[in-house]
Length: 161
Image (cartoon, rainbow, N blue to C red; front, side):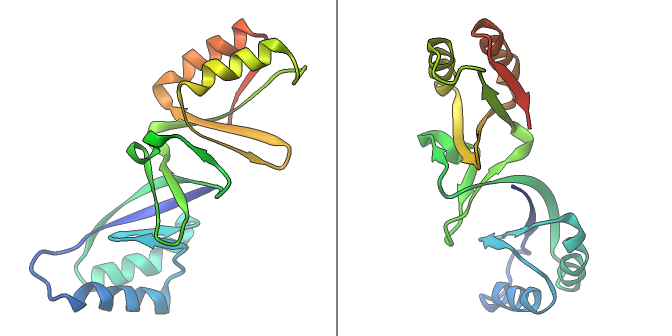
């Protein structure tokens, strides 16, 4: 689920083919999972060295950022674009630094307490998705104590992932 963005700061005043030339060079030496405009997405930081080599060759400054890759089946709230983006290839990524990924459960899945807790959670969610038999939720990091309080009030388990 975790990926990493390499955010390129392309130099001003370059010819239109410059970006295409950089992408072509990257394609021959680097393993890029996905991309969106000036943002390259890699699966692991160990894949960064060949990218750095090429970006330095073209005098392109960059920075890295952790991302959360959510499954295509994820339920995304309308405001998710404030916290991430969907690439042209259909992958959705969220900026991990601003978010919290957690699971939320109750020993009795059919209980009224669990349903009420989920209803309160839903007001604050950015995304939710399932992997196997586990449900995961994504929300703004600063709301973490709020979710912990909801879990306690409704005898649920709140676990950071």
